[in-house]
Length: 250
Image 1 (tube, helix red, strand yellow):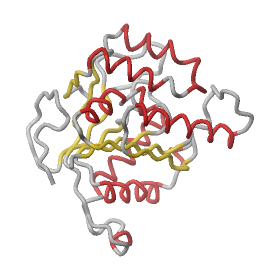
Image 2 (image 1 turned 45 degrees about the horizontal axis):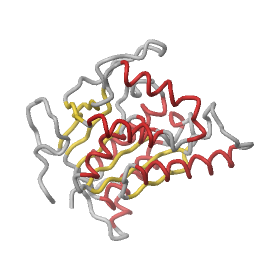
Image 3 (image 1 turned 90 degrees about the vertical axis):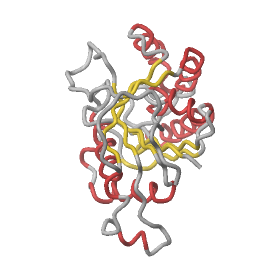
Image 4 (image 1 turned 45 degrees about the vertical axis):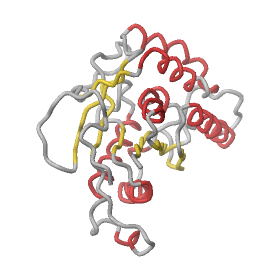
């Protein structure tokens, strides 16, 4: 069974950044998984929540609804602090992701690059940093050997992709984005579904039209762009239109 794992920072990242890929590969019969590091409790938009705990409950429910809409096989929100991932102890955080990689055993991982995605959010950058190190370490028996005593085995993911784009958001701090190596055609229908999945995050309603306008104006409506950051076997760079290109079934 082919599997894809998406590692994000906040509820709504799975739809806004990666929703097209999650939809496309679900429709192709590939199992898709999302691990979100925080419950998004530092968000400015808080819906009806009167406390951080209440907001966490709302955002976890919204995440579950979005994942269901996107056909995600399994979604999980961890308990790391929102807007403070740069202050998290690196080794345990990576270990949590290594454990999930060894459990899920995906061939492909999607995450953010060190730029922090289009918004340059530091949590996005740190989520990508944790995910990158987890990609590298999950296949090594000398990393988190205690996990191997509980029935898990080292597992090498075949491909790691960062979110990428061929434009900047003019109202954000400058970033240097990963080069686009893969253009994934998701089509107009999947774009609409991606946006509807984002709308499952009702606490973030003030962002709905802004997000849609940014995507449509920059013609990202039917294409998601990615950067192939690492592979488990050496290869030359090339342009891709399928994130599972050259993947070998386990």
